[in-house]
Image (cartoon, rainbow, N blue to C red; front, top):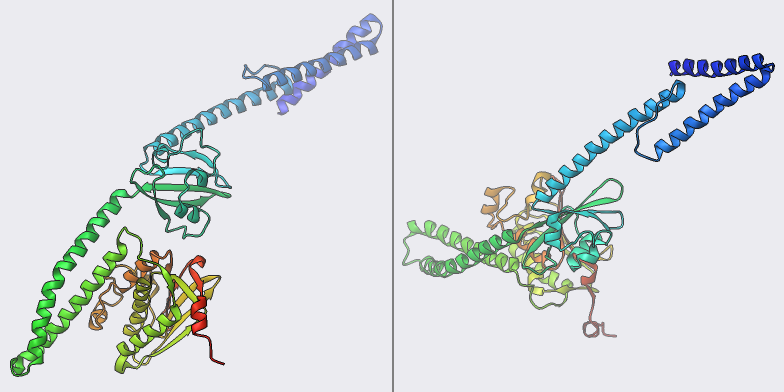
Length: 442
């Protein structure tokens, strides 16, 4: 820059001095100096025009001297660097498009308002998107399934994603998940889980068929064991203890088979059975009576705090299975004399059932896996108490069929709370006929 300033000063001084000298020779030094200054200004105007012309085209950068020479050189260097950066960026974009095209999963880039900015080939295949026709469209205008619309609007758990059939109706089952990034931008990732669901169906069919086949021989074995243990004259005393253990284990196997059949039924592809308006407060009092009988000599204190005016739309058999499993687990896995509280109420406009105990609590690392089949925090203690390891799996699937979710809060030494959270639309007031029947007599 200093070199350019020196050259610029020399150029301007030279033109001014040369003009003054020519004017002095002509008899008017002032006019000559003015002419030199005008030449200097004209030179600047010419460079400005050349710069303007260069900025508006991709032609070669002009050459000059002084400050203008340095300016043109810097412009040429910055243009060369910008061209190289643009070339590198184009290569990165090309590699990204090639790699995204190779992905088996669909990827859709969404703007702030959910409009489609970009999608890969898998998205066109799985979701039926077409480019450039669908670019700029809201994703919910293209993928119209109600489950996806609810998930996209924020009703579902973002981390869990959502499953729905492919829009083309090709018997494909898709799983979608939304990842947020940047300022208001989102990436929709969709994968084909059809084969996974088919394999799960094969597993469910095998479990159901095997359970049905095992139930009959177990019933026969249990019948003979019960007959032998009941008649003291037939069974020698030294064999009574082994036969009692065989009877207990046979009953435990029957409970496992019953739970496996229930779980297979809940996991079935068909929808839940006939819905009705379920009298949840009355149902909870019946479950309390069963839990008191289950507790027996352990003398648990079981309390019910239920809103009598809040009923629920759903399948009563499945809801009873879910609720009784939660209460039964609380009885089995809490110390003698513990307090178990069952609450049924509206919370943030959503029907919520809480089963709370003041037992030992569960460590945080076990909570995410509690609803897995046969998962036990303490396997030896669970088996000793007669647990099958399927109770919470049954609860989870029964709630899923009602579009509800299971939430678990626990702290070591402070007890646990298992919550069934339903959608607001599932809440029902007490039917008019029931309100009349249950009205107090005056």
